[in-house]
Image (tube, rainbow over all chains, first blue to last red):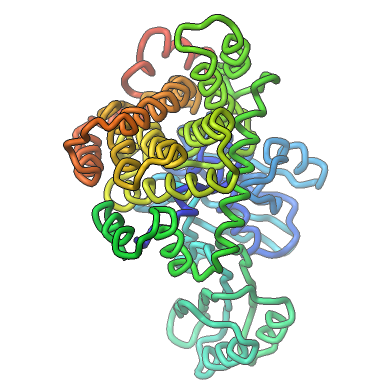
Length: 222
Length: 288
């Protein structure tokens, strides 16, 4: 049996819908972890069934909660609008079309003094999610295990240096995908690990030659 | 490894283990977690399930649209009076209603197998545990048994209302809970699966037709009736009723029936009671 019992009886979440509430919160939280910088404004473009049914399922509250860093089982999820106001974060929703094979999609754009940054993804049902685009770079991140996202110059040796550091810290790589915009330009790799990736390892990865940025999505899968 | 109920039972017989033990072994292998850690997760989930089943019994919750505010308390108060089906059945319905009410009011629940059907497994586990004085340990084993049944539906059919209608949500939840209840009452593994099969057969074809697209009406009512379905299905199996149709074939037929359902009856709110004049009036009132 390749279905986890904890996926059958689970997730533990704030209602009412695993796809429209829990999945939305998780997607926005993952987007925030990927952006990993302070922001003053966030916009949510809603596609597919998110756009037509979000109000009935508190998808809006869940998205804001996730963007503020709250998890899908946080009982304050229903107060996320007020919490955003307290933190001085403004937010808005707009309908949009996101090319995707999935029914529930969102584009989450963060705004700060440095500019804007977007993350696109989908809620797949049962609280599962998939991040499909990070600021223009296509990817596939489901955030079920600690995931390191490294952006680098497309030159030889970077991937090898990065994996050496992870191995040195006894972190096993489950899946690693490398992609780039064009040869010699910017590239990035998505590394799914079996273990939580601590802050000091992230700092070390940032020091690698030709690495532009490193973020980690340490959402621990059960 | 097993892929269906037949293979699961075969492993149980070969290894002289119960369904929950074989399923737990598989979970440890699949997730790489220790046995203790998996048990801890189940224990936490049972706690959250019970909390959601009790939370709205005495206190009305404010749900989106207000369609099911106070349904748990209403049934709970009645369960202490002279009733047709007895205090116990009404109490179990109240427990299921409570989970649905908590879910619709942004409270914490454990999907089992979905958020929309989150009341059935908790209501049956808590109801049987209390009334039959079953230990918490055995109740945990029953929860794992229920999960193993749910995993078979997830793998070989569907547990999404958008794919299979309500039979795939409240039907599967009742099927899971029936196996759990039968286990708690000392049934063999085969009888547990018979109970699971009866529960699904009882509601095969059930459509998903949420009024105003909300997880409220008729979801709450179907959680309450689903819990009762689980209990009577367990009793059918415990009585020794012959199942005739093997559980895996029931699962398969549910999947096929789900595919035959038109999209209007699969969570789109475009059919069933959602499109009755009263249902549409409710939609208008809530969303304008």
